[in-house]
Length: 262
Image 1 (cartoon, one colour):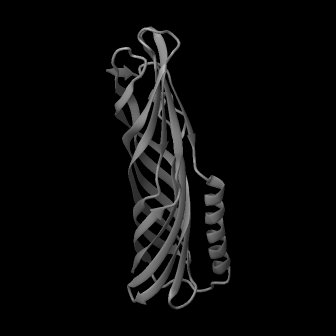
Image 2: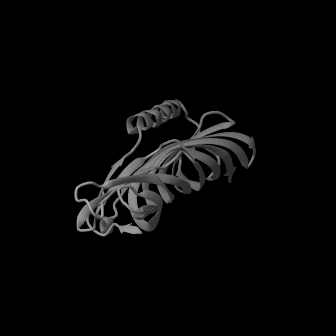
Image 3: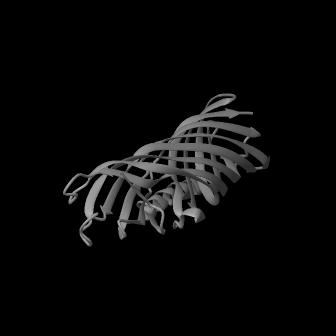
């Protein structure tokens, strides 16, 4: 038997520890900008291609609350979602246009195949006002494909070390699974029910936010350098057809990889 969520929907979203993530990013970038203040050398390279394996440190969470009618009585379905810390794939290109100023573009992809916790109150078919609670897990996925557009400051700190600080708008394409139905079983005398599973629907939204970050490169050869990177990007995704509040996307990415220099 399926209790179908076909009435009003309300959602509440919360980004885990935003102040701590913002403070961490600000500290790293402030240190990098302090270093560039004393850097006088203009890089010889005109372009840097970055290939980075990173990690998203933020864990945004949100909840979903749905009401439905069953046996001429209102029931409720509440789902708690949490996006876990997961790897991020990242690649980008920075072009130096004049002295230490340039532009850049980067792309990143984040995927989390996790679970959500479902709690429901199911109306009793024979006794009004005595709902039956059920709970269990639901398999959901979350995907973010981001395009970061950047204005860049590129400085040489030493013959082997270079720093690129960048920031600008970010366009996110967000795919999120939402629990829509719950399945359960019950038997005479129907005073209890057992959770069997859930159905999910997948929603997509494209939103614009912003990004700020830095990359530190250690030159190994004429056209090759090791690189460490940090980037904080953020946006709010609104799903109007679900009557949902804004969903926070993005977060703090820390990574390491290579710079190809030209």
